[in-house]
Structures are given as C-alpha cells and as structure tokens.
Image 1 (cartoon, rainbow, N blue to C red):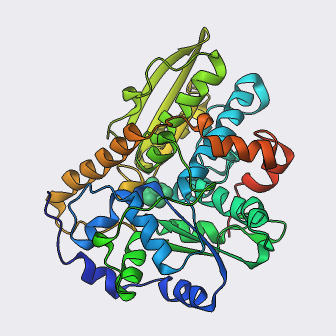
Image 2 (cartoon, rainbow, N blue to C red; image 1 turned 180 degrees about the horizontal axis):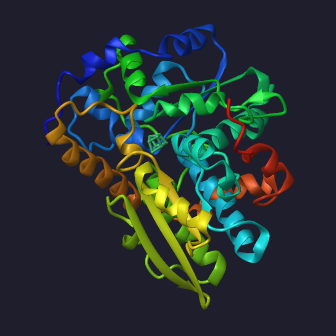
Amino acid sequence: GLFVSEAAPLFAAWHTGDAPRVAGRLAEGCHSMVQCAPAVRAAIGEEFGMPAGALTPGRLAAALRRLGFDRVYDTNFAADLTIMEEGSELLQRMEGAGPLPMFTSCCPAWVRYAEQQFPDLLEHLSSCKSPQQMAGAVFKSYGAQLDGVDPRQVFSVAVMPCTCKKAEAQRPGMEHDGVRDVDAVLTTGELAAMLRQAHIDFAALPDEPFDRPLGSYSGAGNIFGLTGGVMEAALRTAYELVTGEPVPCTELVYVRGGEGIRHATLTMDGRTFRVAVVAGLQHVRPLLEAVRAGTCDVNFVEVMCCPQGCISGGGQPKVLLPFQRDEVYAARKAALYRHDAELACRKSHENPQVQALYREFLGEPLSHVSHNLLHTVYGQTR
Ligand code: SF4
C-alpha cells in the first residue's frame, strides 16, 4: 500500500473539535442518529495505519455503533434524495420555471463564495439543501416517526470530510418547524480521535451494515464524495426520467477526471444538454462572469471547492508530504468508484428506501413536504 505519514494521528489528537460535546451527549443517553459522508469511508482507515484507498464502510458503521449511536444512518441515502429533488428542479427549470444554468448547492464553501461575490446570481443555485442537511431533516421527521420519538429529542450528528460543514449546520434556514437539522458535525479526523479515546481498534472491527431504512444507498449516492460525482449521479437519473430508457452506460466517464473544469454535451430525447463540472473556486469565476454577461450556454454546473472534491476536504486525514498528495487522492477516488461498481443498485431513483420515503412520507419530489424539509433559500448570510 501507499505510505501515509504515521504522524497524522498525533496531529488529529491535538484537535478533537466537537468530539467531547458529542461524547458527552452520547453518555447522557440521548436518542442519537448519525450519518457519515461518502468520502469518510475512503479515508478514515489512513488514521489507523491502513493504506490510502482502503474502503471501510462496514468498519465505519461498526465503529459508530460501538460509540453508542442509536441509529447508524448514512449521508449517501440523502445524496440519492438530493438527486431526486435536484434532478426534478433542473427538469422544471428546463421547462422555463427558473434561470439556467442551475448550479449545485451541496458544497457550503462554494455557496458562501457565491453569496459574497455573486449575490445577483443566487437564483441560479439549486434550492436543495446539501445531503448533510437533507439527512438531518429526514432524521428529525420521518426517522423520529419510525422510532416513535419527539423530533426534538433526536440528537443528529454528521461525520464529514469538511470543516465548512460545521458552519453549514448553523446557517439560518437549516431547520424545519423550529428544529435544527443537524446538531453537531465531526470531521473525519475528529471521529478518529474519538475512536482512539474510546479505545476502539478501528482496523480490527468486523464489517457491519448501516441501519435501514435511512442508511441504504446506491452507487450514485456514494460517488458524491468526488469531483464529477454529483453530475454523474444526476445524469444517470435524468437520462432515464427524460427518455424513459435505461442509460446506455452507467459509468459516465466523460464527467470524471481531475481538471479544474470539464464540459460535456449530451443528447436526451432529441434535446441538447450541456453540463460543466468545476473543482476549485478559481475555475468558477469565468463561468459566473459569462452567466452575468448572458453568454453562458451551459444548463447544469456542479461546483466543489476542493481540488478533487470531498475526498480531499480539509477534515480528512492530513497528507503531510506534498509529493504524496496526488497519489493519496487518486487512491481515495478509486476506492469510491470501486464501491459504486460493487453495489447492486447504482442509480438514485432505484434506491428502494428512497422510493419508500416518497411513497410513505414525502409524496413526490418538490412536494410541499419536500420543500419544507429539503429546500432552503440561499443568500441569508450572517
Ligand atoms: Fe467541503 Fe471541500 Fe466537499 Fe466543499 S468540496 S463540501 S469544501 S470537503
């Protein structure tokens, strides 16, 4: 395997962030629900001496259960849900219901940049909350209902590759009916510190499943953790919704890669559909200036702040030697693509638990209930 600095755990131990608060609430015996982002399962093993690219969803679920969480759910479930809502919003906009291009809104650092630098273009952002916030909102509504508890009693925790996700959880609008979606956010490094403190030997844990129903996910939800992943997941579903036909090839390699900006053009049902994938904010400015000038002919844009998407986020295990970075990021990306390929369900709209959520609770994408729980208004900066 690849060599990743053995000093990383020492650095993580210096900074435990929100871990003590989460540990305290768990010790009090609250009704807790946890989610973890896709990128975490492709990197946390590095904190415990495993090689870069070790894929550990089963150990991660086991570790969270050992820490005492009552429900071990998954952000990937909400990534599938995001595709249902965002894809439906895009198709409505294509029919004239809102401005194009539509930009993704799942990276809070990108959202904050747009709010500060291009406030006149905020209507171009999807109104969808990020998967982290959607998951939290579903935990404290449908999830609470399944468990027969008051949503106000649920302690909702997210494990993220990203420090910006802490600020996102605190944003105005990231709540419903007076209940905050997410109560605490731990980074991958903070979770590792918490596991060490609890003397849980991560590498020796058995593989366990995430809890159903809100821990079940498709391969499409899983690739949200890397640049181009949201776009690929969206196109797998959009193609089938628009044409009524199965997508000819599940692996849409033309939106994969690591360049700062990638463009692709597709034809669906005789209509031309232009998309762009952006990794790094320096690459989004020219696109936004073209939108302002009225010269941008793209329909849908994915924007992620980090160079390879969330697998390279600021809350992930540190790669201390710069010359190792590309190799480590490539190994983490390969792990998420591998996980996508090995899952039986690879399209968000085919996730049976997402289908059940719509049937039993939300109704349909963009319904009144969906809007109340899963959408927000951007521009409420503090
Ligand atoms: Fe956070 Fe980076 Fe992912 Fe954006 S791309 S959500 S900043 S880890």
